[in-house]
Length: 265
Image (tube, rainbow, N blue to C red):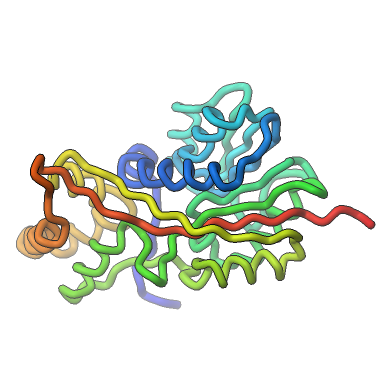
């Protein structure tokens, strides 16, 4: 078994502050491209803090949303902020979804598929719970090409000799990999689309305080100790220069993918 540190997201509020803004920006671009009709029943697989479910509620007039995530902390945050008659959330495994066959019109993974230990198995579950003719879709940071919002911080930490946690399925990102997965799952009309988003922080302190409070970063900084943590902070401040008003802005890159569940002949 690898001794590489694992990424976990137990604090739903901290995760939402760190990644929620990025997820919403990418999700807006994703929905612009996907253009789903209103009134669909959605499965939000790996729903996390509920950022994508929130977009669906605000933009797509869904008939229902059912979110699933393995983290109890994330589910608690989603329930507290979004739980309603339309949106429900429960803990569960993406590779063994607690959902009936053909129960949804659309199944989505928002910035999740590279966290699934066996992406093909997770995708097969999405196909299983989506009705024939329904949509199976996702968007994912282009991790292997440095597309993640965390990538600048990860690069600087690695340059300091630190072992940085990585998702278990890094290979499940990028247009070619996602198209291949969707086609291998037997989906039809498979298409991909590039997404570029830019997020602005009021100043470097806001960026540092939100970005380093989630996932594996608190543990890594504690392990590094005060001196090395300050060195990493200084390296990042040099890497992400502020504009005239002190704001920090930088981009992240993702790929969207969609396919249609085949109907019976």
